[in-house]
Length: 311
Image (tube, rainbow, N blue to C red; front, side, top):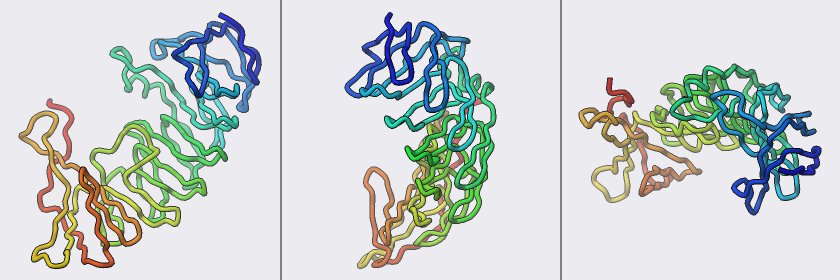
């Protein structure tokens, strides 16, 4: 145990740990009460676990120049962020000192502590976003170094209303923004019809990443044009030159996790770059819609919605 001088005040009871250090940062664990004078005010680093949900103490991490990188807090603290007040148990910073991410809760999931237990502790926050104010239980909010809101990740079961370049829609999981405030991506709560360069497509991903809201299935360019989406309801017919029949691209199917007697749709991911249309997959296929005819069709062999319980 030792003291550690920092730009935010001296830390006492600091235990350096090799596992919390690498070529880009140093880290250590606190064993007693301290206060750090941070850009967000005086904050108390975590030095002991208070309850079953936070059974382990996490390290305080610094960049090699001494600036804060990651700060676990001893208790949930209300912080003033660029998007408004948010409760926080963990804060990460850019090397400049600007806030990078806010985590209202920082529990350790285990066989004794599930995400459902953590969700019960979550409280709703109201944030000012470029798309208007939203109120929901939030897993994390990410910011650009400039302070602009970069993304919001929602707890499962939470949804918000989002104003996008193509209208107002209900979103789940999360939403991401460009630094200028325009919507970068979002995850639709339900199936929605969206206009694309090749026709109207029913957008929905029945297998979203579910981890964070930084990257979502419906994506836009900074100019508001749609650049990507996922669908389980539509197929694309590409009428290539010299072929008697069109090349048909459609969503796949796979066995349900509970057995192969019921199939689950595998969403087809489509990307638009100018006139080029790319259907992603193990072997991506790209077409220039300016040179060939492309037609959006109804998927004639849809599978069932996913079922995650065998009961």
